[in-house]
Length: 195
Ligand code: SF4
Image 1 (cartoon, rainbow, N blue to C red):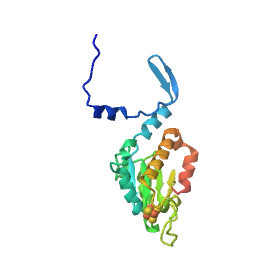
Image 2 (cartoon, rainbow, N blue to C red):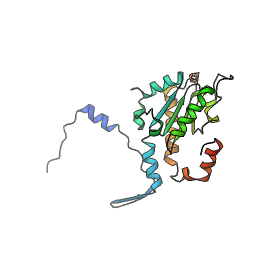
Image 3 (cartoon, rainbow, N blue to C red):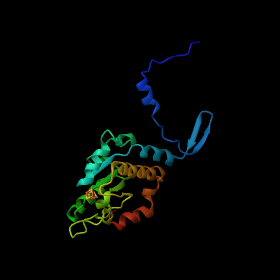
Image 4 (cartoon, protein in one colour):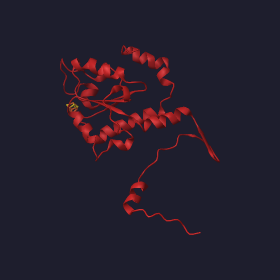
């Protein structure tokens, strides 16, 4: 029997060759079956389909725009679907100086997001108030919402933002599906006055 040949343009071939598949979760494999934990499969799916909710108030937001654009291409991480509706997003990305007046708005956006949700503080201002140690600026968004990952820098380069997203992905992949119902997690939210 003659081998089947596909007429693929060399450019297309190199694009498909460069696709890297996600690692399989730990499990048991046999002939025709693979068994693993539900939590691992859910984590794998969530990790590669994060929907960011950008909350950009100043210069770090420009770096986020560069991160979304074709050169850095956040879509490679399954995060191309940027939403501006908190109810449909699961990754809150806070980029920029947050004035105390803006704090309740940010908190409201966080509360409107459905569980499971994660928070990425991008840049010095969102993480700690940055250079604005003044009466009007919130000295870190973790004063009003729980933060999962902090990205340092003023402003952080797109590579740093991508690194932050990858750290979030690690958390998402390894999080137990029971965590959001645990007493510890409820206590964390209660400490922020969120039920
Ligand atoms: S961390 Fe620096 S670049 Fe980012 S919002 Fe603050 S002042 Fe601007």
